[in-house]
Length: 281
DNA sequence: ATGACCGGTCGTACCGGA
Image (cartoon, rainbow, N blue to C red):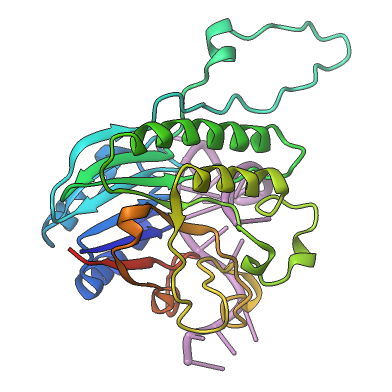
């Protein structure tokens, strides 16, 4: 069985490359992130031509996740239980401005964004995840990111209790160690490398999820993201922020895993490369 | 050369991305 995860940075903009990649790599299951479209806008017919069913979760311009599978997609879950939404920054009122309290229900529970979708594919429970960015460590978005990870931990703990093969892969927006960024000094004071974010990943591993580290194919570290700007990819100045977490028994069956850097080359790539994982049946 | 931001949107600048 071949599984893969890829942040495509807009499935519409990436469609020709996505279809070509499916034909070349032939994964049985592909988890997508940042599809950036509603479910009704997803190119389900195009991927169906290649034999893939699509489970899709989208809310418009931002975010968006999907699971493509040619070995079945059952028990689709849009989001996970307890998943928080983003309430936004609290605006400081102008001087003399009347403070208007927001609607209580809205303030206490904003709607979750399209950042997680689960599906059972060929007996494997698969989650495609797109963690919040966090923006800056001082921002409300960063607090939201940590809340989202805490809720994810609770949800995955329940999933692991089901005692079936489990994969939780996608764009975690956290580099697990300093080795996972091209220059740690550049990231001092930035998100993606802070101790609370790394602790959130460690808490997932403590549940029994294993980090399936792919082969980098080039260079010493398996980066999965390179900024579009300033020739970062060509200089291999990247980050490992896309992760493939799997339950122990499933991880034991992994034969090989690699970052497909070829998909980051050429005209019109995503800024992320896919991770491809081959598992013994 | 892999080659020096990109995608989205009521847009022709700006936000979000990381």
